[in-house]
Amino acid sequence: MPPAPGERAAVEVEDLVKAYPGVTALAGVSLEIPAGKITAVVGENGAGKSTLMGILAGLKAPDSGSVRVFGEGVGNFDPHTMLSVHHVALVPQELLLCPERTVAENVLLGTEPSTGPFPSRRELRRETARLLAELGSAIDPNRLVAELPVVEQQEVVIARALARRCTVLILDEPTAMLSPEESDRLFGLLHRLRSSGTTIVYVSHRIPEVFALADRIYALRDGRLIDGWAKDEVGPEAVVRAMIGRDLIERDHETAAGAGVLCSVRNLRGPVFRDVSFELREGEVLGVAGLPDSGRTELLRALFGAAPSEGTIELGGRPLEVRSPAEAIRSKVAYVPAERRSQGLLPTMDVADNLAVLQLSRFTRFGFVRWGALRREAASQAERSGVRCRDVRQGVRELSGGNQQKAILTRWMSIRPRLMLLDEPTRGVDVGSKEDIYELLQGLIQEGAGVVLSSSDLPELLRVCDRVVVMRQGRIVGVLNPEEATEGGIMALATGVEEGVA
Image 1 (spheres, rainbow, N blue to C red):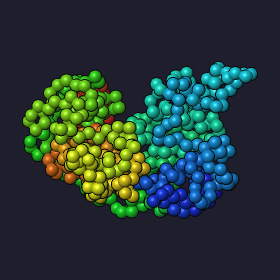
Image 2: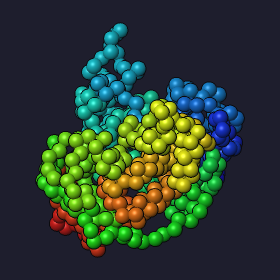
Image 3: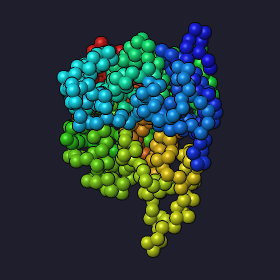
Image 4: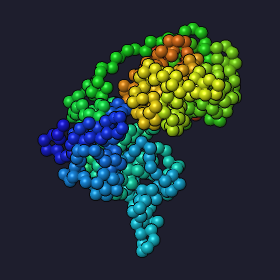
């Protein structure tokens, strides 16, 4: 899709091709990104977005095709050339910073102002303060990066790009780890950058924020450009259809909750939460909402035996003592952590190992693993759960984020859990994979299992959950039934501003 009449192209991509063993990541992608605008690139995990952004940032070279930046052809695809010559910078999902150095040292790393042969710390702080002020940020240049929340660390990375005269800024899933308030702060910063003439390429799975920010939208699927639109020419449904190749089936959440109490928690206390009590019915999905410091993640870890706690837990009417995750697993309690890469996956192993690790005894005889039988079962499970991979012997870290998450869920469902604990189960997951995950959960609760789902995605809580527990500062401050739960009401309880919020 060419720029509108009168618009100048900042980046022109023509017929880009990039292939890896067994998969074509980009299959002849051509598009143009207008200067001084915000262009969104959307698509499911594995659509080719990260590969395209990696090429634009110089992290990888295309097999064929060309890229021009403000009319100048790119000859060398490496980060230094793309930043210093073409002034293209990437803000990745995993921020590359030196946490034990100050903000100023990170912003001007490698370009420190000097007086004679030595860097000038005064000029270092002054120039950093100026760059941050341009962003509307009030971060102290003397603070250690390790002390900053994620949204301020992103501002440091953006300031570092501006210090190197960046004119094209790429952001890859920048709100994946942010609260709604932090996301709003980032959006304000991006609007200011656009007003100052910076070209922004915004990669996201979150369709509402794409429509709130972008001037233009491109949709990729299976390594191909499907379509592109000016924002006012298209609606969210058409964009989602282009992303996943089908219409989403809109359906109201139908509760499977029965009358019997599956899990009862009384006066549970831990290092960051206290006096937590609730009941979970058979077949119920109980949501847990709250700000990042509310204690909701720590609560799920305690229920799984991964964090210390005191109090009473009953499962199926019997006392449940979970002093370790191993004891929790023996009691049919499953836990999917928010940090799937560092806590949920076995990253050095293949898909089959990740799916079958909890059922190795089924495939072991006289101390030897029957690898053929294990892989056949893993392949069957992957197919049933919609885990897309070349082969179950493929490395699990080669999968897209959505397929990694489905693999983790499939692993836990192999033990037929009675209680499933989910922390941010669809963070960084595309809209198609979200639907697959919801289908897996629906099958689980239809069998009578209970689910405790902690999430910062309020629309997800309202859609999926039968009730929503709201936590603030380590305590439950409200339990909302479907007829009374709204995004505003949840946030009012979570922030302590109960009055005056619809």
